[in-house]
Image 1 (spheres, rainbow, N blue to C red):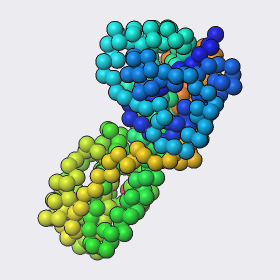
Image 2 (cartoon, one colour; image 1 turned 90 degrees about the horizontal axis):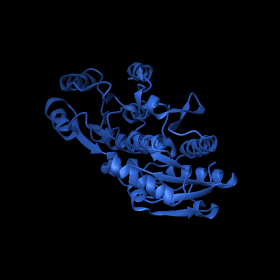
Image 3 (tube, rainbow, N blue to C red; image 1 turned 30 degrees about the horizontal axis):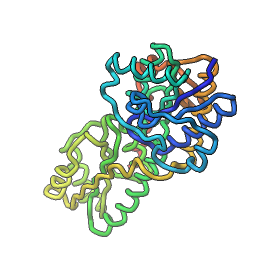
Image 4 (cartoon, rainbow, N blue to C red; image 1 turned 30 degrees about the vertical axis):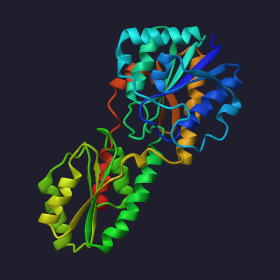
Length: 320
């Protein structure tokens, strides 16, 4: 029987984490279960930094970005000795189960603790949308809106100065932010892990747009780590009729008040996590698939390929 549930956020923060914390806390309290917030992820768990949560603890946080519990990375958590110390901290405080909000590394930590006797449920909290087992992660929609808002503003100045704006968005080996931003903003090109990067192809396309289509500006959306956007901007300036300018949106994509979609997604996932733990389920992660909130074993989720976006890349090609 579950009497106390812990909750932590791990890895990079994402908008909507607070909404998930709120949902887990209030659903659990409503079920007669005590809730303990663990500060700064697995690092705080290792150090025993946790506090009891009440309904008032999560008042007015649903619209805040970031995470009220804080987050930190703990590479040493892979070591069994560190995991055992975390288990000791949970048992010392009488915590029977744990909700972990974060990315795939956080999921692996949750799975390790489950195997050692503490049931854990993972919630997908990352702006990159790079976790298998769910169509959308908590924070992706808000980050997308931030990208679109900024690219729309860049388009205004690009058209005024005959520029090609190369905009780097986050993604960490997943091109969803770049793809969705490119479609939403009417970009001329998207460069992502899925498309690959061919410099000559980019320059030829821009030359065609300038000379044959006579476009006055262009927007290229690039996933981080795919190419050097500053170097690409210089090549565009030197080899096409456009003036290349690179903009890296950076960590502004992580911040801001979560969108209504992310608030709803986080709330529904938080409720599901508590229900699973009360049913004695551990080692699962929660996801949204085709609009329904569901769960599957973490091991299975991590082995699954991410959902294909080929149909969206085809759509992009037809729209440009």
